[in-house]
Length: 379
Image (cartoon, rainbow, N blue to C red; front, top):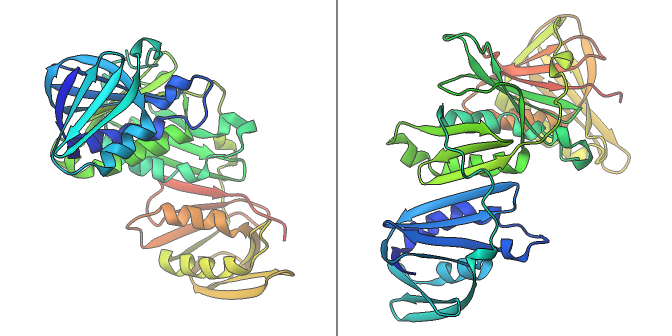
């Protein structure tokens, strides 16, 4: 194998796949990148057998071939090389030579025959979804996914089709919950078939969002859609020059509709900036364990208060437009902040309540397609 590739294009491909190299593995070869070159393309792959990524870049392929190299060593070398063309040459005995201007390095490679078949990469996406819209939906739900690995069915985001038989109203819904709060977003759908609910792991979606966001400028010039397919227990996404497969969580997702309040008795509307700043200040003096804050609603103001024997106490007043009887209820302040921080270009937030022991339903004012549910606390 012998190729010549521009460092900038190589660095972009590396950045797409490097997060998928496992930190710990029982298969030592998985700490390597799988590299191949043919037909004018440099292709680099990484997998932990649950999430796999392949990225390609145009290159001058003088001799096609395949090999694997240690991901950390290879990435560090490329990072330190000067800008411009880099030439790679695979010699007998899996010696990988790297040339760049006045630099010449040799690293040990390993035979690609030991590398496993890349899971899910035989699936070709047939559906299309707006990429930035998917990234936005992930960002507005991911915060609510559980990080408790013993509740593995809650450690991802649930995807499902809403009105699947309708050609005009069909939408994709994303839901995440950890049992204490819930995030849900519903967005109009392009062409994508999904027979049943699926649960996509948090890690895979975090990296998918990162790749989409870093490609925003390029997406704007290519129509902005990504290819998507669900098959054989994998979610497969193709975006520009990167393809990702994510193994789905094989479990049942709980009926989240049970925690969404159907009838609320009071409503408060306030500026996102006002409530966010107040909560950021008051959370500094709440109990580290519970993060509990008392919310007291009145016709024109929301009074936030907290006290902690270890840290002290605090009170904040936020102007609101409130409809309903005066009400006091306890909430985890961090859960509120997580929802508020997921909003972008939103001026006002609506909080719907159903008594001192009912959950709070949060949404951008005038937009019911994005909601957050926070369960109450006894203070």
